[in-house]
Image 1 (cartoon, rainbow, N blue to C red):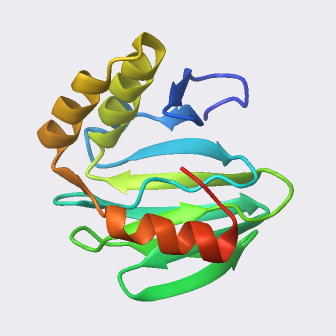
Image 2: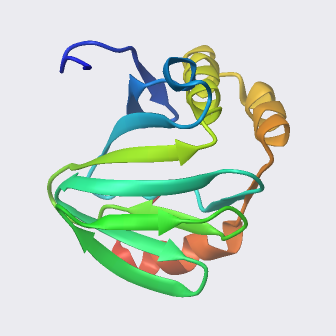
Length: 154
C-alpha cells in the first residue's frame, strides 16, 4: 500500500510528478506517477520508442491527441498511448487536471526523476541527452495548431 503522503515529488519540466509506484518496487514491470496539469498547459508532443502508457484521469477534463485522433477524457476515463504513436495531453480548462500515468516497462520513473533534477538545475543540454537516452523524440509541428485551437502553451 502506498500512503497519500508517501513518495517523492519532482518538477518534471513544469509538471509536478509524484512517484506512487517505482519500477524497483515491481521488478521493472511498470511505474505509476501522479501528475497535475495546470490550466492552459500543453505537454510537449512526443513519441516513445519503447514505453506504452495508460492515463487514468482523476480530476478535470484532459485534452488528448494520440496519432491522428483527438478527444477529451473526463475524470474516471482511461487513455491508452502505445509506444511508437506520437501523443500529447493538455488542459484547456480553468482548474488543474489530475492524472495517474502508468508506464510499461517501468524505467520511465528514472526519466522523470532525472528530468526533475535537470529542471531544478536549468540544464537544457542534459535534457537533450536524457531524451536521446530514453528514445523520446519531439513532435513539434503539433504545437502551433494545438495552442491556437485550445488556448494552451508549452
